[in-house]
Each structure stands twice: as C-alpha cells, then as structure tokens.
Image 1: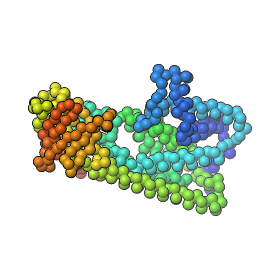
Image 2 (image 1 turned 135 degrees about the vertical axis):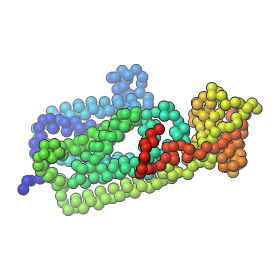
Image 3 (image 1 turned 180 degrees about the horizontal axis):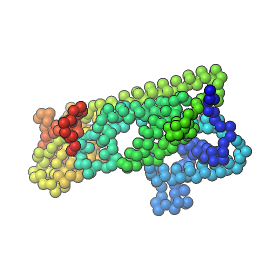
Image 4 (image 1 turned 90 degrees about the vertical axis):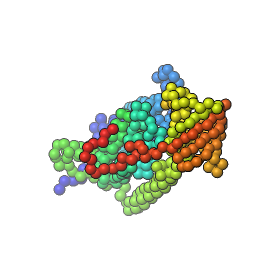
Length: 416
C-alpha cells in the first residue's frame, strides 16, 4: 500500500524563493493597508514620472492608474523582501507550516469572494434585466461592458448556472479533501471571468487576475499529482490531509468556528440578497408612471414643434425607469441625444420634481394628468421655458428581448 504524499521535508532553492515572494505578495494584496494612499501617488510622480498626478482613488473601476501603480509597488516590495528573507534565512530547509496557513488563507478568501459573486447572481443583483433605456439603445451605441451586462442580465437561469458554479467551487475550497476539486472548478470559472473582463472592457481585470493567481497557487500543491493522473497516465499517491494540529480541542474548535462563520456568512448574504433584490433588483417595485412614452405633441413657449429629426430641442421620447426608491426620467430629443434627470413624483398632487445629476439642488416642477393609463400630459417650466408635452405609453413587451421567451423547438433559428 502506498503511503500518503506528505509535504516535502526539503525544498529546493527555487521553491523557497518563489514561496517567499508569493507569501509577501498575497499578504500585501489581501490586507488593506492605509499607507497606499500616500505611497502610490508619490511613486507615480517621483519614480515613474507619470505625466499626470494620481488623484483618482479606487472606485467602481478596479483598473485605475492607482491600482496599477499599487500592484507594481506590491510586486517590487515582495521581490525585495523575498531577497532579504532568502539571505537571512538561507539555512531553512522548508516552509511547510507557513505554506499550510497561507493556503488556508487563500482558500477562505477565494471561497467567500466566490460566495459574494455567486449570491449576487442568484438574487440577480449583479446583472439585472436590461432596463428600458438599454432596450431602446441601438447595439452600436452600447459599450462593450454594457453589452456583457445585457447578455448576462437577460437570463435568470444562466445567472443561476454561473452563480451556483461559483458557490459550489468556493464551498469545496473550505474542506481539505475537496480543495483540489474546488480549485479546478474555480480555475475554469475565474478564467472565463478574466476573459470577459479583458474582452468586454470590464474594469476588474487586475482583481480577477489575482483571484486566478490565488487559485493556481492553491492548486499548485496538487500539481504533480494532477499531472500524473490527467496527462501522464500514472498513479498518484493520496495527499496527506492531516492538519498540523490534531488535538481533540483543536478539531472540535475548528469545526465549530468554521460552521459558525460559514452559517453567519450565508445568512447575511441571503438576507442582503433578498433586501437588495426588493430594493433595486429585478423584483423591486417600479416607480409611478414607469414606462416608455412617445411624445405625440410638444409645445415650447406656446409654439408647437414639428417632429424634425435634426431638432435639438423637441422631445421625442420620455423614459421613466429605475425603482421606487431611486427613479429617473430620461428625455430623448429628436436628434437622439439624451437628458437625464432624477425623478421624484408626487402622485397625490400629480406633480413631478426633476433635477439634474450634477445639480440636485436646482429642481423643476411639472404637473401631470393621466386621462388613462397609457396617456400622460405634462406641463410646467424648465429653466425659462414653458413646456407642454402629450405622451403616449408604449408597451414594453414590444421588445423582442422581452417577449421572445424560451423555446424547446425551433424549426428555424431566430437570429436578429
């Protein structure tokens, strides 16, 4: 009977050097040290001589100049520390204990990160169904990222498929016996995420690549065994999964702690998912007057404007969208330019309060009447102009993307 494969008692020089580098690199990357806000702008200006100072901190984009310079700083520091560490600790034969705990840290970080993304897909808060403006937008005017969000947001079933893959892969990482399987699943999933981020201009390239690097590092401990089984058709001994501490107190405490943390996290994510879904997900209540409206009559300062395609003043469409808590009104002019407003309706007084995104303090009040559910008549003043608009509601189900549905049988492909 073959003995289980244990961590090697002696590492070669390349293994020790690479471990030292990745140990420092991952610790610097995972823990949010506040010093970066001072170091990164200085490095950009003094050492890299960037043409513009770094003033944009990490935000909705994870691929800012700040992020790239920060990653460069982390890599340089990791190289320097690994070099000093190699000289100061050159007599050590292996780092099995440190490797064990680093892999544990990466396993849990990857698992909970995948849980976050997975639950966001299950509750469909990351990729909501395309809103009305997106449905009206020509393909050629959408950004690559918007196209990817539309693709993902269209299908709830595909969100479940990808979300469950992330949750299952992450969950398998939480247990030593299933770590390799979980890492293989996540290797496929995260590689696809990296490809989407690069190919569709999604600004999460650096973060997704680091998640992929962590997955590869976790899988590296099993690399030789997997190569033997999958490529060389050779038997591979089992990996020794005995933890470094095996006392009864340690085993019991580990199970209790893991169960508590995992249960609390899943509960929190589930509650957050339900709350977010009700607040701004696909199932959130729509705002009053929600819909797409064609402007049949538009009167500006007493003059009825004819619908000329080059007109930069006359309204062509009005779109009221968003959610009950945060809604917006978008005016599409005849020349297809858009004006967006924060939309606050008072259904009791039949009043609409609008403000621009740049200046929410300046408001415009319009009164409205609804002769029936498909008609709205708006009156009021915007800046110095008197406005009258007669709007007719369009059925949202007119969009093929909304009404197509699922079909088992297709006699001919419907590819438009």
